[in-house]
Image 1: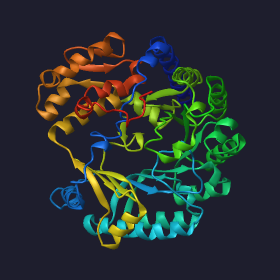
Image 2: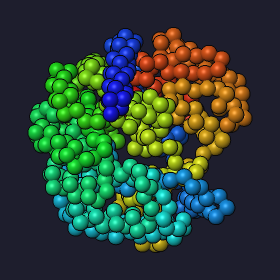
Image 3: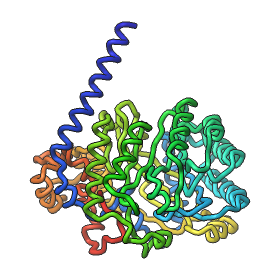
Image 4: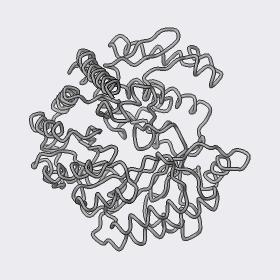
Length: 486
């Protein structure tokens, strides 16, 4: 026992040292000026190519061929799947939201939706067979907790009937704090969920009023305390900076409260005001938005505040406590990325169920119909509701491997790409290596004849580094459809 205790103490000290070293080296290299310089638009790289490259020429027939290739008797893989289930409903509108959603107080609509989800699931299992192993399940939205507990049990029973959950499967759900209490959280735990993500955005009352999302601070604290008591393995909190009525001073207060709340993970997103694309954002007065300078200040202070209280910067807006599986995966070079963001699960195929859901099977991406009417209509015809997607070219696959290595591991060995894709890396990517030179001069990457390595400071600009290898983006003069990379 003494040996174990000493080992645990040494491990704890090493994690604290890691956090301190990361804070010191990172903050030394991340100046306000550098943050301001990279306040530009760019993709989030939950996939490559990104979803804006999907085409309607990719049809249900292409998706079915991809399923057959992945699950056919001669080519079936043993690796677990990931599954995403989209629940589009919300009771009220959050003005900042850019998600696919249906605003309604009529809960009868969810019963109909579940019936169609059952049809879509059956169309899949008729093709791929039942009992495929799931290593990861995520319920997103919208607000999955719009469903009643009985409806959530129905959804989970449907999935357990058609798929086999791996013993250590990650089963997560996005939670609107306004729709749950301790009793509901316990029900989620009993259903098998082991990870929660709470949408907080900001604790400031004026900001909450401006975005039409009122949720008292104490309510969130009580929910997180209850979730810990029940034993959820990881609790995430989403924050957004750049919202109306925010200021660096007001967001400092939210960060102080987050430090007290101490969730296992924090996702810190920049608000992208694109009212021409997202109708709900037209309710936000642009005069109430913080200036670009204040927005960069909020990011700079957030980085300092979260690192100072022991969080590890995982990458791409994500922070985690040193003991969290995501931070451990970052240290051990086992980080992966999918449509839900960073993940500890190995890179795997993703089946997507529900309206607007995006999936990945083999060398393809596909997306379901974006409206309930079209989604229901296709299923009524006995068809899977895939309406667009993309089949990746050899160049796409090569660049995806490069971009994901940069985004997840922060290091890319030329030899691994040369062996995996039979290319001379330095020759194939000569223009990109040249384009990286200014980033190297700014201390964001280190380059030599054998590798590219993201520096501690460079992790905060990893999207900018990855963008260099995005062939589609480099050929695109219109980047306004993307959010800012910081």
